[in-house]
Length: 352
Picture 1 (cartoon, rainbow, N blue to C red):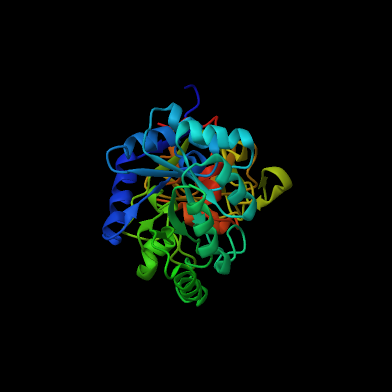
Picture 2: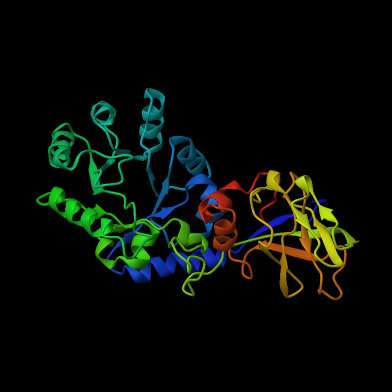
């Protein structure tokens, strides 16, 4: 590795966050969500870290499930989007995957493929899922057709907002449409696990919380002392220059020195996954203190204001997010969410 830009992954933190999810819902089984390359953290390495703990993993697509099986993982693998082609159903059957069924077309395909399934009800997310009044009939249809229906589930749309009544409404709808169905139930995502005990049910599905980022909305989104940060994204200072008051930095001259200033160039940019729209003042961390972003993020570089940082030098480490700078704060400054930043860290950034 010739460029000191790195995503350091703390697998002990992932394990601790998984244990926390289990402790918060002690009566529930836990399926670890490792889709999107484990939210940018490395799917196979995260799966290995959880091998002795997790009896089930969830991924988004059959392609992700194939990689997991190819990596030697024999646990239950739930494909959250289900299958969308005959070849996908063939692969699912061959690899003994469990597929989500969320629409009438998938019901018909599952009856032909005879693969294990979870059946999803749309209780208010309006994205995927069967109409609640169809759930019981579909479960019966699948079972009578010889399909192994393993669970019924739904997905919460507003659980990150603890004062939003939508979650309670969804819980009520799900309770009504699953009444009389003798199957395990799954409702809780990370926000549900952390903030809505009534959603825990038989299976919980921790995702973002496994990686130490809070799913909660609002000013305290990045602060949850129960979670351990799993990714530290860092780089190094590769250049430094002194600016006079009135001189500008970077594309568009977006940042102008209001006083004599020391500006450093850091070897990371939007091609590495750092958000281009992060504004001036977004925090980074250098030598034990905040160093704010100064100027437009470039493809391969960004610049920070080191005025008042005695002893800063070329080669010093810069934390873009991690234990000192919350990824949630960087995301909020850039007008996005931590999920996007973590999954956007590009392949050219080594994971260690």
